Image (cartoon, rainbow, N blue to C red; front, side, top):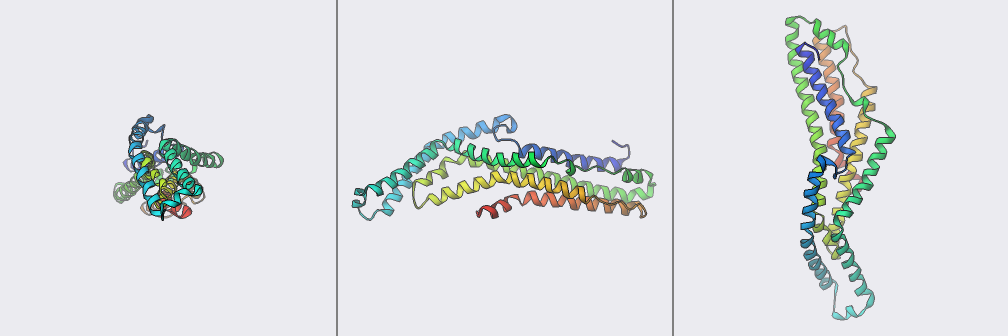
Length: 279
């Protein structure tokens, strides 16, 4: 770490960005069971089990609503295919509620396999890390007192913006984890809607939405890899013929623009998945 305050400020901002990038890469390849040592997962499984009783109650309600709504007369129950259809629907919904936690885990495992395959096949995110070029550091250290005053303002604003983007990015990834937990904890309630023909659409939407949240991890991984390639191929070009302040301002502006590309992709991961799945 440099003794120059301006250089140290930029290096701290870049270090924050690099740390968050590394943390994001670890989060998207981590299962909910392992997140934070599994403490949150144990709470989620307890809530899921506690809601099973409510799910069974809703199962009977939705099943009865479906039967009474679709039955023109009690003669319909004398038709084996009619009774069999309702029986299969009831049993399927009952199984879905009983094994709701296992169903959610299997869905995440399948989607997690997609994420891990992408991460393994395309490599890491080495190109996404940001370091301060030696020419920039030398120019700042050689600047006089009066020239360094505008540099303080430029670096403070740039460092603040980079730090804010880093936290926005990591909060988005953490938000995905919390949504996974909420979907899993409340699963018995929406899955009970499969018992009714008229309410089964709610259950289908729930499953599609959960798959979408799981696949957000794949979009985030691809976003990091795309940004890594983009940042490597469009590294800011330093023009040493201009003043130090202008050179620093131009460099920070280009770096922030590259970072905005990634933040925008990660923030829009849910929208991209919804468009793909039609939810």
